Image: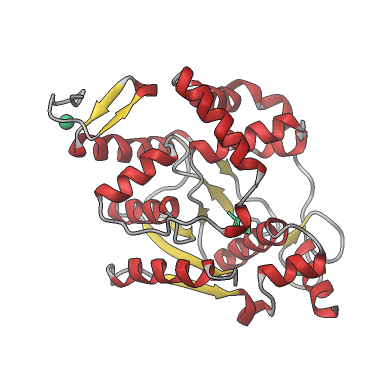
Length: 301
Ligand code: Q46
Ligand code: ZN
Ligand code: ZN
């Protein structure tokens, strides 16, 4: 296959765009899609201080690398979740990444040291699937670290495949509250909720992996062991089957939702936020936030 732009040898074909690219033009396409998302959804400006949530996986490391390369003021935040062998291996990937880029600033949180629990402990004590306390802990810590560090925006590495699968799951169960909030930008809210954005929203997992390999970004290939059997995998498989028969469907599904499907659900939003009486972070309930209630339960057991 030939590069659509220069006629040279293509290293990747992108059926949904009906094109193929050589290395140089794939990198140009990939970075162009990030710039386009940042602009289209008004994610941030060069003046903003950005905190990138990094896990050691390809998406977050590629995102952080690209933002620094574009000249944004982007620092990283890594949370050691204490998950079996996965956490130490992820930590090593992030440390390696940082050691090759001496100008980077990495904020680190270790759940066991800083909050007194690990995700497997929380899951077994609360008798919940690991992703439940994990998701809550990550949301809480991203916001808290961003506020304490004086950042304007938190960036996560969610891509087109992730968001299409989440949308599909929310539609299957008609989670109208979640549908209203599903967007590449969640604006800052009074009461201390920092703006959150997803600059890789126009790119797929396969494209991010290709970009990482072409740019020598070494990442954690193994997935979190707690993700095994997750419903999101089933949704991704189904959407990939659809995509292979009808290229472009996934993007139409997600971006069509942003443009035309989401507005009626958006009206469901708008709950008031008040500061948690214990930690001061914003919460939608009176009194203590969900995170403080969870950590209290863990401490009691
Ligand atoms: S890290 Fe945490 Fe994920 Fe592992 S426990 Fe679930 S939520 S799968 S992105
Ligand atoms: Zn080319
Ligand atoms: Zn709290």
